[in-house]
Image (cartoon, rainbow, N blue to C red; front, side):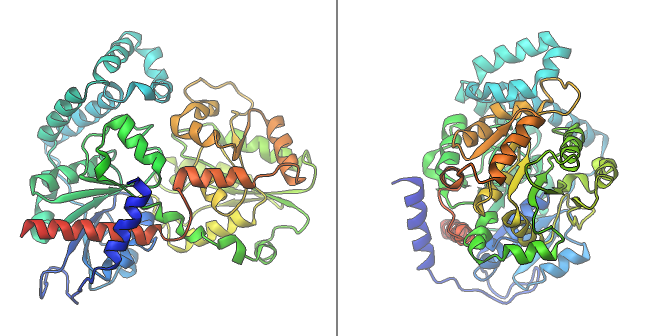
Length: 504
């Protein structure tokens, strides 16, 4: 049975099961309901697990324990005020000298593990990421390269390495919350890519609790190296992601479940019901203008992106396009608060009658990049209203495909030369992005002139995008039917019920 077929049958089984719920207060259960713990490490996980329909469906049938850094923030407590949901702050290790030393050691081991233990088939992606390391430390890089060719092919060595990390960083900070709530299932958003997820998975396994990861991102299995610890179950976006888990990481096929990506559910049927002209008029987009939405990415990945955006703004104002263009710059949430907030003002200065700079409404000082649920609907409207979406490398191109809007990859670096490891051109060969490009549903611009040419052809209706966009959706999601959240919740309930039954 294929991944998709297995998921369909699992969903039917779950739907045919009656789940009883109890009205209970935090920590004071009248009876023992099914209990599921959700670990939230940043706003993108909150969007996926808490604001996509998954948590609402789970809370109708189970007791939820939501562990998050901002559990005590008023807006968060109000939003998830529900007798079936208990909020717990993310536990922290006491910052003793020993713990600080182990934190530094874990950071060092993370870099070594990602490169030494990754599948050699992923070498092109991480070799580019390690180009700076190669230039500064060529001998150490060579040793790492040889080590990867030897140990990256050894399942036994991978297991031994994971055992060492498991012993050194067992996640004891989570023991208290696991003991207090005794969940039947622990759910994370990454398979150990985030150290907090790895610590929780290890702690759960020590407590003999079943674990599951609802895959947060399309690149976690190809561009993050080998993970530090595996959950018992993996819920994936697509058959492609399932094969990546098997081929690159050796994850057992029988523990992979296709559910789709719930954060894209609201796009199903969206464009058909959307009043494009009304939205554009309400948001000040001229009726005769082509709307280009540019989505920036994490500044840590492309620190010179501002220069690229400036070039595009100059082209708009220099009337280099075949028709008037209105440019809407959607800033990445990671630029709003924290260390990269210093980049905000230079972007804002680009605004004007023909350029709108949007600052996403990041609402937390503790949970990074946390956006309100309404922002998902706003983004869907923006992308559906657009004629073209442009970005260097982002899941935004999948969002755009879901509403039928074509995208252009910005694979150029502005007026100044950039080292290979920082160039936008490098994204073209990243494993996850190369597969997306291969669908033919997205176009690549290698210079500003190239970008203008592709944009003009698209604005003039000279390029047909329908088949390519459909191929992108099939590759990344299997299908877009608006039911990924329901499938995910039903699968998590089934796994939790199985675990509860086995523990009796």
